[in-house]
Image (tube, rainbow, N blue to C red; front, side):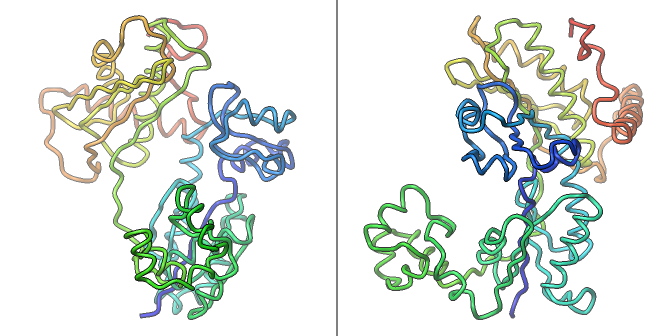
Length: 390
């Protein structure tokens, strides 16, 4: 059966959210990744990209390329908040939504024409709603398979819409650079260039047998991709396996009190995210990365799943002595929770701990306040400037 697939990709998402929250930044080179020179760029506005700034670039290099850049710290809780609003719009048009990151998703709108019109009309409606209701732009690609839809969404960025008619997938792909094709990276690209392959169309000159002998299973993948053949379904039943946060210090840290304070901040964030997504988890992992980039992780499993920030913090404090390696300076700390369970599922009640129920109600109240008035309107006293002891 002919399928109608839409790939939707938010434009410079993190940087665009920063501009959304701070309109005075509009038109300026916004770089998300923090003010420290120790990190990497998470996102860059299109104005910053004009200077050669891109994601995964070292912040120190970004400063050299774009000294007038406006650097902003990563605010994952805010990006997830906006992402949920965007995904809610996507799901209004089809239940078959495969979210593959915080800012992009595949939609299978096959059979939705009777309700909303053609796949092109649905993509246009979604883009219009995201712009009007949220204030951001999203680029879309419409095709008969996931591979082509994803490539198409990138052709006319930002704020673009590209339609690839059924049966013309190979024609659309042929003139595009071979590096645009999924699975062609730094290792494969030189070998393809030696074969005279510069575009995706060039790859169609070779037989399946030749490509399999030359590149193994990856050669088979490239053979079909070059022809726009992709049988993968839009998987809408992906479940979240873990939720976590980590933070790189502006400088290497040896002060245990400062490490504990940062862990409290992270536990608060992770607890808020768990509750926002209606999850609780049993397995808690603490990650420590040292100045020499050596990482140590330790985990524990709770008797009952939790999304309470205080319980998460107490758990990681118990893991901290097992993770610290003497007085080595610490570069990064992180907390992750897995073995997740949806809060809507039945769970054995803790008959001997009424205080836990009280905390759950308190957390709900605090979350409502922070949602209405902004993240961290209410937070642990330790995380205020006046307090110092976790």
